[in-house]
Length: 273
Length: 294
Image 1 (cartoon, rainbow over the protein chains, first blue to last red):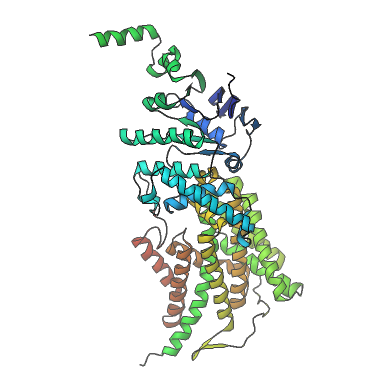
Image 2: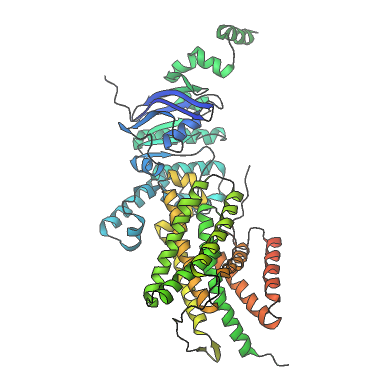
């Protein structure tokens, strides 16, 4: 079996802020219809990497390829149109608007006409497209179980629900790759399980490729197909979840020990005692 | 003494005319603030340049008003675009106070350039609205006030409508709410910035023509922007409805106080209102209360 060509490929990406090297020669591929998780200690460069991929930062060197095309210097709105959607670590919703308005804005990227056309021209094709999109939105609302709050202002919602609305808006962009920045951060067990289920369903039912940054190891190990570990801006390991957890470098990065075997012995010793 | 209701209604109607112009100028200010979070203290000077452009096109080049007005609006829009691209966009990410200082400097430059081109003497705009008075019931209103009011009301209503239903308006609201999220949703945030300045430039030029038609033009007419600033602070910096209501309040208050208490009380009343509102509602009557939830 040959591996399918990657939908997103990060090639020796480097980013620095002044003298601070945030990312150094980061490379990895994201296979279509998979869940790839980026993990690493705080300050490892995960969010910086995300911001490069979504176009908020311009890397110093390296390339980002989406479906084979170089998008390293493409503006975020254009990336959205190509099929990259993201959520934010600190929920970024449009506060004054309702849940439905927020979701509707997700389709903004795909409006074909420009703003001035839309003001004066309401063609039939456009109307049909609008109906199609409304259908998609209904599907998303059903799927994420947020029908009961569709007309609520987002500012009034609980944290877990807001995260879900943000996911809904990203889905409304009908992305090929969905980037989730800490989708379950700050959630309780139950909310985390719900979100994990949604993410799996998005992959399986909608055929969307997922790239996520997450700290919740339990969830990462449960649902990821592929894990990339960052530390101090370098990729220190990548592979299947089970491989990554056995990697001495990863254990060192997370537990901070210099002698991994000694550390493991100590842990085992404590368990035995 | 019997209260003269007819006189009162005439004063009120004149005040409403001024209200509408204040609201229109406030609208230009609010649009820029909403989209770009820039406090543009040069809005009064942009208004003045619009009035002078109209003056040049009519009195200078002899164009009919129906041609000169769109040209002056285009000129105002171009001024907005130039300011945004050359001065404001390079300041992106700088502290709000720095950008505010830059707009103060910009105001001085616009005054200086105007004096160099057109001279410092106050002049009257050529009459283009006609002089025949209009009576509403028994009350006399100047034609200029009626036209000014109608134009401002239509523009503000149009903008309110566009913000609700036009996709570009929604994009602007989204940008105002969260720039990063808007950017990642496929909204072209820099284009929204430009649009806000272009539209505000045109709105300010329109207000300038109307203000100039009522009171004449001079390089110092930008002080009208100071009253407009009070309007938007009272109404809430990021609220279009606030600019409308604030404009009404300030315009009427100025008219009543100016007539019944004397001209020297105008500013006292205006800024008294400002202080009162700030004490009760620090974000203005309709402004977004910015509470960070930690």
